[in-house]
Image (cartoon, rainbow, N blue to C red; front, side, top):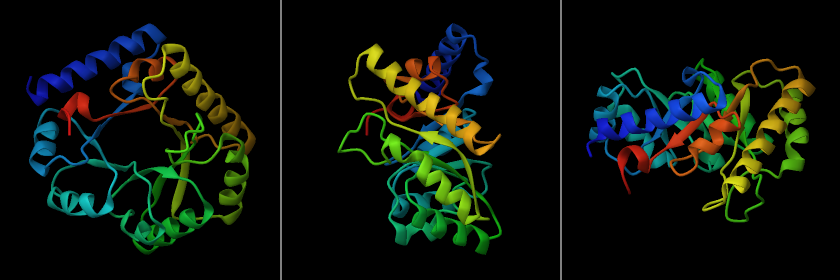
Length: 229
């Protein structure tokens, strides 16, 4: 199956899940995870109508993004970010899905201000408490948000939450994880009075339906579009 056909199949899955959930498919952003794939493959996806792309390693992503500057793409950083690489995110990426501490937020903000831009940030929450996954504990969200809000960081916008569901989890386990994140996002949005804190990045190739049923606004799809790495 060619890349365009794979994209169409993923979009059909999103539309079907949205219909089941009583949602508008247009409210769900398909983020194509292009890590380890070539600029040429990304160009093919763009030609097939894909706009949002995600990378997880700065050293791999920056040359690719620079080589595709002429295309109107939106870039998402979805990997664990080393603090000394924070300066490279604004100017290359419009979204970061993996904010997990105040120092990183400060560094990202300084870099964004220097480049006269703003970076949309999602806080990564390790809902399932998997030691192999990054992200803050669920109980730490309110404190981190208080710290970031109090710091008045001009270069970043807090836009919502991200999580990774349990790999190979049952439908019940997946939906419980994603419902937990949705509840956290709703509570935080109310607590801090942040209308634009409205994004939920959750769901990948294997579990996008469960994520959409629980309110995902972004799904991160890699193998379903580009094939196995």
